Length: 508
Ligand SMILES: Cc1cc2nc3c(=O)[nH]c(=O)nc-3n(C[C@H](O)[C@H](O)[C@H](O)COP(=O)(O)OP(=O)(O)OC[C@H]3O[C@@H](n4cnc5c(N)ncnc54)[C@H](O)[C@@H]3O)c2cc1C
Image 1 (spheres, rainbow, N blue to C red):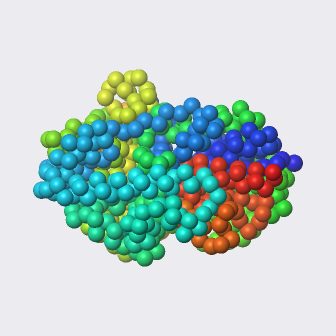
Image 2: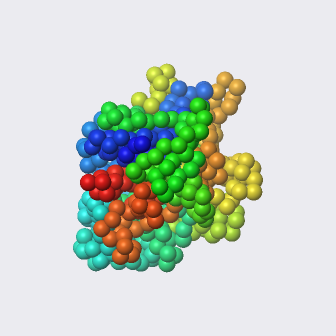
């Protein structure tokens, strides 16, 4: 008999385990795979490259400093000097966190005036205010919609982020197609949506991308995502939690009984509470039910380059351009075209994507020889690649998506990306591609959805939820503690924290 059994050892499960074990609760965590961390891991992906890549998630924004302090985590999150670079013909838009004048000049050169930069500044100031006000509430019991509106305390921000479709709000604020696209990409990460859609799914995605820890900055975890998981696992173990890998949960009963199997055989344990770090559709299955799986939408590429590619734009060095988020064919109209093609069942002809070079900000993920050789890592996150495109022919469709994405990259570079890939002794290039169907098969994500399900508003949407933690299920002993909880999604630890708080409240 345990006080708490946690099904799944992703970073949220580890956060919950650490908080609960520190209060003296007997905690057993069961993780199916051979390692902890779920989607927050570093791995050596290519035999030919001594590089530890953040194989799935790669940047940290949503993890509250409060969790880091509470759990005494030794973590270094590095701010990126360059926020973003977006090539356009032989020029481009550079947003330089360290040089406001250069950013303003880049806007002026791209758009021919100061208006777009002024609009950008106004939008950034608005999201910064919302971030400061909303982020602290994510670790509190849920307020309702009216309460959140009072917290936001800004009618314009409320209208543009919470009420009118992001596509409309962005079109109303910006005139330039490229600038509109740079803003809208945050609304489309892992989310197959038309930003003009009344469902406001894209708005929810945008909101979580601009409020992280009260700043919205997307930082580089020194040592990669594996360092985040190692810090969390260390905190949970030090507090006395029993963390087991190679233990697959096979059934969960409303009474708190959990069935699992490991190499010794089949077992059953009982707990006062079961915290579920698994996607809601998986929980439904483990409880003997059924649920419609969500649909993820992205193509993730992990690459090691022998060197960074040359750019067409002579005013920006590759180290600057790739040090932040490098947008590829992501103007608002290119995003709309790609969405229409994917919705029609086709791999976009010019896939929109963003790339980022981790090793520029944190060379420690490269072995000494690789580092000395000038090699760099490159992570690509491709948009509008919904699971439906990969269902019938997963290998062939992945291959077509990879080729289309390389071709898309080549339209904005001064040399083919494939010429820059590091190659093994037999000529094999250091690149791997993961479609939503790959993520479903290897990481157990239904539909390959990186947030376990579509993101939800950070407030209660019905009266029953108000004052609760957003982790409850219809069974009092069973709580969500993963990305599928309200206010979940991303590497945040928030559902883990909130599930732990719900248990402590229920057992006080
Ligand atoms: C390609 C990709 C890129 C991303 N990029 C970012 C990013 O840069 N920044 C960001 O903030 N977020 C990013 N995300 C999203 C983020 O990684 C996830 O939303 C978050 O890590 C989910 O954490 P979790 O702890 O809730 O669940 P998970 O990490 O999914 O962990 C669930 C755990 O449960 C285990 N499990 C599954 N079934 C069983 C079972 N039956 N029994 C026992 N254990 C089981 C799994 O093995 C896994 O360890 C990305 C995700 C992906 C896939």
